[in-house]
Image 1 (cartoon, one colour):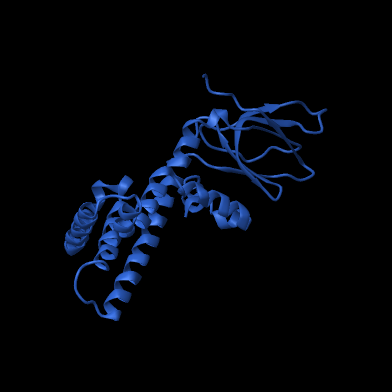
Image 2 (cartoon, rainbow, N blue to C red):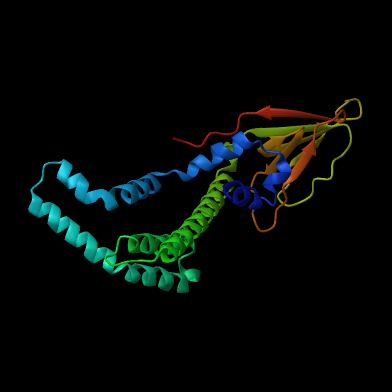
Length: 243
């Protein structure tokens, strides 16, 4: 989802780029941020909090109080579910954090598994399945959000990316405004036309996906240059932002 959102911002399909499984897996690791790690840690620790307090040598009274507080919170798990559903009603206003709504609902459903009272096996199974689906949904939304934000940062700091210079024997159809700087080097040159002021987005299978400086998401094209006998690609360092 991260790759799809990132490359879709530049009007490309990630699957058409031929990315390997390793590359996709490494990109997916960007989802493992500190808030995610903290949430995963809490999800493991909270159900075992009484045992943890007992292992720390705290008094039995404190342990019983923690157990009682845990049961009271679990008994009110439907309030969390309701809060998450209400957040979904405000979806247009919380786009950047929309993934929190299914996470809250899922947490409420999982908390209900520890609520006092007997639950039938099918009820527990349904809660677990629904919570798992909601967490997968939230992960997908969070990945898409991160991918789009990464794409926006890339477009905003395009000048710092690797510079691409295309030398061609024939004039290329690179239209758009802004477009590349086109220079005619003269009839005596094998590579007569020189295209500069481009920045590299990604390179795959002798295809260079480049963006012109000043690229705008709404109107400007993404150039795809195929490296063959009529074209020579030169790569240079991009301009580094001031520190």
